Structure formats: C-alpha cells, structure tokens
Length: 243
Image (cartoon, rainbow, N blue to C red; front, side):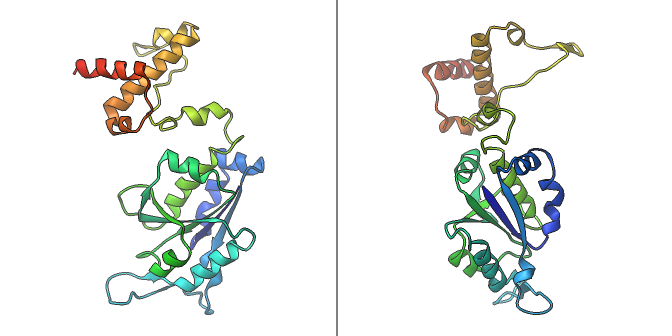
C-alpha cells in the first residue's frame, strides 16, 4: 500500500512514521508513507497557499491551485488513488471505514488548515471527507495521523498477530473484553479465575460476555448494528433484567 499525505507541515509526521507499528510496517515494505508539501506546488516565489475568503469573514482559505497540482502529481502513478480530505464536516471515522480504506492500494490524504480548503478542491478532487470527531483542531495533520495508524495496522503482517486486529475494540462491532496479565493479584484485585483455568472454551465464552457487558454499559448504541447470536441476545436480556 502507498499513502501520500498532502500537508503544509510535513515535518509533523517524521516521528510518527518512525515509531512502533508504522515504522515496522514501513520496514517490512507493507506500506510506503510519503509526505508532500503543498507549498512546493504554489505558483509564486513566496509559495503562498492561502488567501482571503470571497464574501468576507474571519480567517484564510487554502487556495485550490497548489492543492490541485499536488493531488495531480501524486496520482500520476495511480489514477485510481482514493483521495481523502480530513474535515470536521466529513463522515466520522469508524473501524469499518478503516477496514474499507485498507483495501485500497493507494490513498492520498489531504490535510486542511486555516478555515479549510476552497470548495472546488472537494468538488474536483476529493473522493470522501473523513472526521475523527465532533470538535475542531488546528489542522488536518493530527486526524491524518490517526487515519493512517488505524489503516496501516490492519494490513496483513503489520501486527504480531492477525487475530489482534480482529479482536480489537470495534473489530466485530463491540468493545473489547478486559485484559489481565501478571501478577495474578494486585492490590487486592485478582485475575478472574476463568482466565487461569486453561479451558479455552470457557475463556472464549467469558470474553464474549464481557465484551457484550462492556458495550452495553459504555456504548449501547453499538449493539444496534452488531451481529449477535441467540446466546448473545439471551445474555443481554439477563443484563437488562439486572438493572
């Protein structure tokens, strides 16, 4: 996979790309991560990339020409690359969306700044807008880093175990079950006995129920879309009766 990030601040990503799973994925040649400085595609000697908005108002708007040229250059080797604009007005990023984006061979991620980008950029070049939540950040660099991490970790070989990606929170539409490690007792709190039993069938059943319990307690909205078995529904019915 190849991911190009169009940004005014390429240095922002230096340490992120050289850390943990992203670094390992690059070293294993599972993904190529590039940053493209939008200023390099500006027309004038001062590399101006923003201007005042038509109609007045506070702030500046990123000009369409440099962005358009940058996207066109990034697309030269793969015209079918998916262009994603990180925008607070976009669809909220979910695990399902991360899985969908992980299927593409080439992603181009556009980071906005100031008051955003000229709307004609979205009309002409952007395939979809994605948000990481209902709040405003200084620029699209942080959201882009979140998007890249959520996608790259799903690539085969990026994690130590393929099962890890599937069992993460939201992997099956539910929050993940609680985890425990050594010591078996800490400050009076013991590891659940079932996890020490060695009975993998009982452990799997316990984890499924705890995943359901945690989702019901913390994100009940997720249960509306989750694929639930008859046993799952029976367990949730018991939880509701205990209210």
